[in-house]
Image (tube, rainbow, N blue to C red; front, top):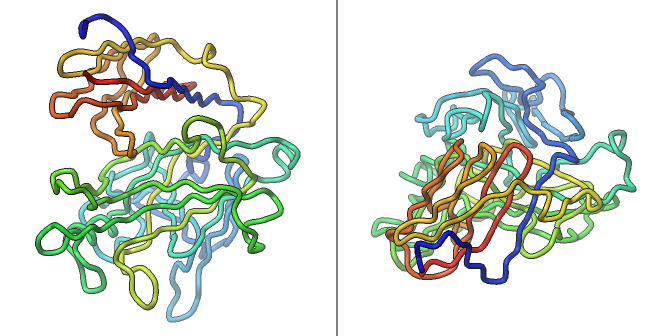
Length: 331
């Protein structure tokens, strides 16, 4: 029975991202390789329907103070403050450009009112995140300000996560409470088995629609980092992460399951085999949100389950026009 081409579904839910809204790619800034925009020339940046602040403070010789910088930096090995604008992934997700978020406090992205108007029912669909090079090596090795995640024995239950807060157009920076929020872990050492501990190294998709409904809406989203390594002045872990290809759509524009490209999932002894009618990427994700394995740009994907226990997992398929997520049971 394991070799039948079938999808065994436990409370099936499918989330679909259609290109009916807008995506921030950071490509419109046309930066040369290994350069960045940190607010020194302008503190307000825009792309597509997005509007955000990038603040540069001229005190003490000048420094990037807050907001979202735009970068094409490629240094994935220098884990120091001097390498503030690099992703551990070494580039943007599909191009050279990406955003670097300073998130020791809430950092906001807004939907531009002039683009679609405030009456539209906006839903934040998802995007890609990675650790900055600086934060990655700080967590991996520790530094003069922050501890090594896991501590000397590897048993310390350390973590770093992003909290995405979603606000309607009247709130957010006016101290209104968020309408909803979603947490995503960039590093997690809370597992009983230390072999499961991880610090993300590559671009990872964050599905902001959460099961089972399109529940995270509003005309602005904020991003705020939280760490287990916290002192009197806030978190000691470098409070930076990288962002790319963030998408929003409309509540009225979310397509049905039938609009998604068709695919099949075969449950094998040691893998899930995904066959898609469109060129796609595929990921196997735990119910806790950890990326277990992935396969890039193909019509057929082998997602290994050989080392995984029996249980329910999420298979996520990312094509050009949609992102679908399906719960699959491994015998």
